[in-house]
Amino acid sequence: MNNERRSNGVDFHCHLDLYPDFEAAVQRAEQARIYTLAVTTTPMAWPRNRDLTSDTRYVRAALGIHPQLVAERPGELALWETYLGEARFVGEVGLDAGPRFYKSLHLQKMVFRRVLECCSSAGGKILTVHSVRSVSAVLDLIEECLPADRGKVVLHWFTGTRSEARRAASLGCYFSINAQMTQSESACKVIPELPIDRLLTETDGPFTSTRGKPTEPADVGDAVNALAQLRETPIQTVEENVRRNLRALLAN
Ligand code: MN
Image (cartoon, rainbow, N blue to C red):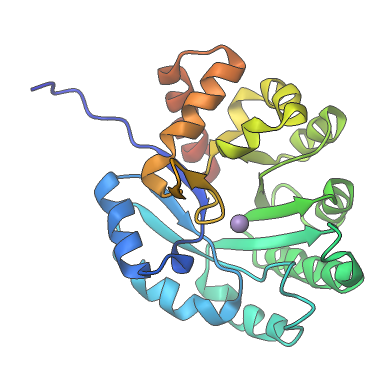
């Protein structure tokens, strides 16, 4: 048997609590030894996410308030704030200016601003951020409210332009890439130009699918393969970079 330690994948954005059996989904990520960030869409989900990941080796939970839910649940910001002291990871948070959610954009901005201000004053938080059709507005708020030395941001499912990507990188942002986003022609032009030291992988399961089933953390190798192909880099190099980037993100 080969003694070399098998490499561990990284799934930095997965909704484990939205699978039919949350607890089993956590266990599968543990067994697959994938470093997984279990994001939440509402602070109501925090206690169970916190408890189910309190002694896991690979899975961590993030405290979220999803921009798509802000209009229906404006009162939850106060609850989000009460839990922030317990959470190192924050997400899913951000903005969504797509056609279904555009009408709540003003409210979303107020909530996201408050989220960033709270993270800035707490310090040391790591955020996974949604930015559908709103990359500039998201970056404006990050620039204004969360200095790089007060918190770190990972842009999840980034769909911005090359110049927005450069601006995000200059603000210190990371990018988490999933296999499905590499099917977009415009993403395929931007992804090869993202700085190699800011790349992470994700699944965004169960909102993506793999071979006809909801994607799981154990499937994150497909994102690694897609990145390797797009960047014309060996798979092993991508794996090593992603692990190194995760360590850098988690340092201090
Ligand atoms: Mn998501």
